[in-house]
Image (cartoon, rainbow, N blue to C red):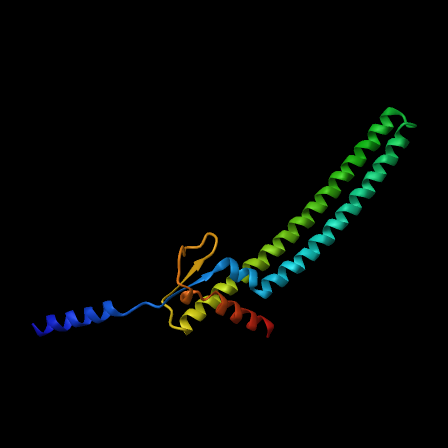
Length: 168
C-alpha cells in the first residue's frame, strides 16, 4: 500500500511539472538577422555585376550580328552560311558561359544561406538548452505555431543574440 501511494505521489508530481515552451517567427528572425542581410546584399552586388556583363556581351554580339548581316549581302551564299554557322556557334558558347556563371553564383548564394540557416538552428538550440526550454517551435509562414502568447515569443531575443554574436 505504501508503494502504491509513493508511485501515485511521484506520478502526480510528474504530471504537474510544466514544460517550458517558446516559439520563434522564422520569417521575422531571418529578415532581421544582419548576417543574412549582409549576404543577400553581397550577392545582389554580384548578380548586378553579372547582369551588366551579360548585357554588354549581348549588346556587343548584337552589333556584331548586325555588321555581319550587312557584310553577308556582299558574300556568296555558301560563304555567308558558313560564317553564320560559326557566329551561331559562338553565340551558343557565350550563352552557355553566362549561364554557368549564373548557376555558380546561385550555388554560392544557396551554400551561404544554408550555412546561415544551420547556424541559426544551432543558436536556437543552444538558447533553449541554456534557458531551460523543453521546446522551441518555429512560427511564421509555413511554421508550426498557429497561435502563441506574446510572452512565449522568443524571436526578438534570439535576433538580438544572433546579431550581437555576428557583430563580434
